[in-house]
Length: 373
Ligand code: DCP
Ligand code: MG
Picture 1 (cartoon, rainbow, N blue to C red):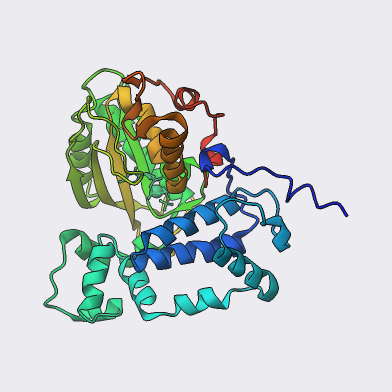
Picture 2: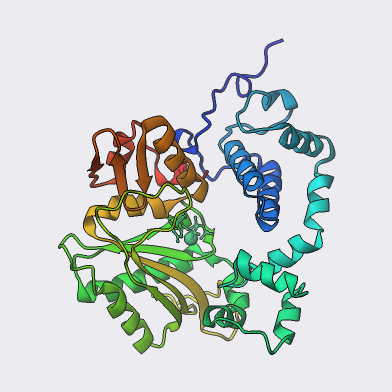
């Protein structure tokens, strides 16, 4: 008997940055289950198990064949006994009763609802849960409850924001931002990044990163752009974070550390009805309404750090985590959204595009659509 070539013979790296992961996930039935468990452990503040399930899910996403038997997953990294038991259950039953059971737990169901609101994270969810709230209705009915401006907008535009952003809406947003930015700074580089750059057809937001080859000319772009959006009546919410970036600071040791670039978390009032050629489109199903509330993140970077920032904002999150882990453990260097530091040579390595960063790291280049880990 010869085992199929597709399974036991493939060598799978433990690092997502050494695997090509496209959106063709032929094992969604398993990865969906693992992603739910990762979220379950995130909600129960069990970081270790959350990371373990994210790694396992990411690894399975890279497999080029559908899992049909346990022997195909025997030698894969990151798959512990508990994970194998879940795979086995799904293979036999078509679903995992263990996962369904955890999903029906009260804490999971409440956190799932709470965190779906823009501006509500684990901390707020935990607070509300401890206060005895269980559903979004409970929160809405509690008039005394203090909400941040962001959370108020999260509730106000809840339906729009939780319905995913389509590719067409991301393109419209990208065009809108480009047209505004290029009026001030004609040579600004404006790039649609995040999930849409990886080829996703839907996303939870639009991520755009902006820089300018002329040193310092990027500095006023964010405020000017937001002023125009405001004047055109296209801005529903903005939260501007000023830059705290310092060129000499070593990259962060934490794989999930946020970057220090100037950025804004926005909600746009995006016109939806008319395209340039006059077709009626209604991607959000909001009949009669000529706009949809869309979440947009704008990030501004100096030109020197742009390639690192682009690599960092392209994701996926798991790809980024593994890229940093690989850099630390296999290369003895440090990587974050600002740069790459070579600890033995004590220098920052410059890069004018993403290919050069992969080269510095001794990695085969992965295209953005191969980073869907
Ligand atoms: N990112 C970051 N710092 C932040 C937020 C995000 O470095 N403060 C990075 C990690 C993500 C990428 O940017 O890989 C995009 O973030 P999103 O949360 O928008 O994730 P995606 O765009 O991949 O998915 P989607 O928007 O469809 O949920
Ligand atoms: Mg995104």
